[in-house]
Length: 399
Image 1 (cartoon, rainbow, N blue to C red):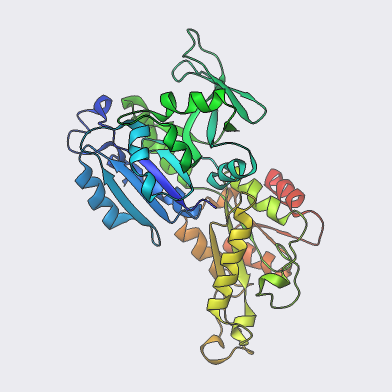
Image 2 (image 1 turned 45 degrees about the vertical axis):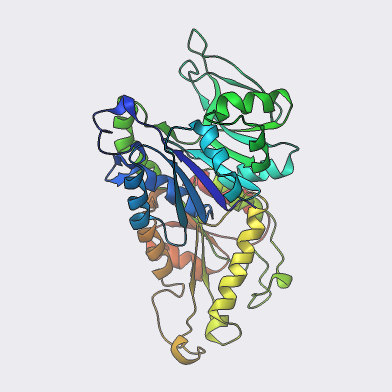
């Protein structure tokens, strides 16, 4: 399971000068935030808990920024380079510190791809690395990649005339042992590793058409000022838990009691792929009644998250109400604004995640779920059995 990432962020940013004279490229402001903050936010919501940054130019500024602004629960470690080592050399130098599998990203581009879906492709295939590939209308700036099934067959030079195709999206899932194939000293993943893996049939590709931007040019950096903040403001799929994701057997809180409902796992993965935030909002009266603790609830949700990750899916957040107005024990016995049909959990989630309400909706199995969504100002659909994915796709189309 991939829970570690490397962000390659040691470039000089010469094409963006004078902006980069005193600011390293990953810290350039985009919509009022450092560009790096968007990358770390996106990694954190996919469950990445440890990030290495290969740094070079103005490395001390990157390190200070990460100390002050890293996402909660994430360890960020900077690995400064005295001399530029390239994308391959910087990564190979980290080899003793890396897990068996790792996610690798370019620090000056953003590709909205399901990181865990890419990791699942690597786990399932007989390969050493998997590339996230972007479908673009013109590959002449980048050079193109040819797929045969899920395997990368070849890398082509930049064509002389514009044409559509697949290009490297700058996001990779890798088995770190393959880094031993790189030469000593400065080297490139794109030139010194990936072509050889493709020739050996050891390189996979996952096409996607999600949001993509590279801020390395003045014109694309200018475009990023509006497009990147707009990308971050995502629609959300809110899911009740018991009776929607898993069969409601009454106060489910142990892995051995879980029966996933039809299409539940597939729904999470599919809406991750579609670029939605996927969140659980669940009343948990079992906590209020003393049947299990909040710690047990969180441990159970961690297990659910690991189970979804095995299939390339993830939950961006889980919100729960541990209260009950009449049956709660001690501090859990009270009226609250979070217990559905009250909208508190939804309102909190939308505020904390800057959710695009217009494209968001909730699926629950009770009228109280639907009422909570109505009060929060978003659409809702009641699940009464059948394939959850089919319902959610129809709901999305009908918004």
